[in-house]
Length: 611
Image (cartoon, helix red, strand yellow):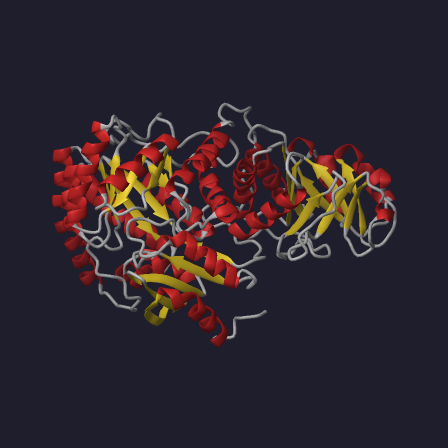
């Protein structure tokens, strides 16, 4: 993995109907239907909408053999209508359904966590080495006949590991960790290798972007050591809807795409499936813009571990540095001072604006030559002005620098002036690589100045801004860098850029400023109207800053993905909901019409409610 120069990871080619994946083929975009697989007419109509929106693979859930058989009917109807886009069967808990689906569609997804292992109970089981080996033998005995079927019918396989559905067996040995997810995947990949079955795609997903990125990087490294080069399917599970869903997906998927990892992606939104493709397309196109960029010469800082990066600690300056949560600096050079008072930015950069026209309680950053020594006002310098730092009696001074500016002389000034905050900027086509290079150079030089990550965009498309900024800032935050962020986009209102910055920090688990919702994208297993339910839950709970609430359509990933949540709302049956506190089911099978009210009561009973 090259942290500084973009190039795609070489992967093997997987043949999936008329649309191969991996190798030099484009990064494919896909989505999943949310209608019943048994409703052929609705399934075909939705698949066509998804295909016309840009889906290159369309996935359907197949809970049982009946649904798997009907995928063949859907396949024929789409082919008769002139659509040859490959279909994928999504299988959980039912190997027999996988066997049927292998005869009907071009690709079958299985989940190692529940393919043979029994349903997750969260019990802390103990296995001897012999017992553990016997369990793997059971997997082999069931999995090999399925691979033989796939060979016969030229069917591709996705081995899809989810953080929320690791088996109790894996949990007993590895815990709920990236190492456990990788071990679960590798058990199945080694069987594929032993059986000379190479038509395999891998996904290894989590709702937590930190876990997701670390796990995929670890998997790629582990596969490389065993000479495996299978293509990767990327996605953030339960990303949510609206701005949160788009930013969270961009942070997780964009970070890995920037590493060169990923051959197909799915942006999982709790919206209609066809809404996912434009987001995915913008993300892929943005990452590809850096292809063939001018090389960046840089070296990884000693001791830095990309597979488990820790937060880089810098010098403390007021509310910046020394492991404090990253600050948000809002660019107000457009003269607008409208803001969300629920989540106000920490600093306003006002450029040449006269600070005397603004209240003293605001923390203002002003271009150095317009700076006045007044309360809560700090000067802002360009690289060419850095020699003037000593002439300004300010407790904090901000200096805008790029990688190209970091000469030995400038680094020495930064080390001597203990009041300086670096505003790290870039105009390189691979801006992420350039900023990474600068950060590693600062670490190597033992320069402890706090660093504000800064990016400029001119993007009138709000969704595109969310995607680009999420990918750019998110990657650096997940790498352990950044004492703050500053996003400038002169093409949209400033409150939207502020909201985007807070959203990125939350998605990267760097700063929590609002309620965190972990909501699935819906599929044919979903047992209630997911979008309407999310809206009701948000209306009742969106003021509970820092609380994590899972809203899950069914039990496949529900309790597992909600292991990171404080409370959970899970479909238990038609019109029935179960409510969780952490991993523990507190209320079972309550009527859907009472569920939001009961959720609020549960939060109050546990002391987590505030008005």
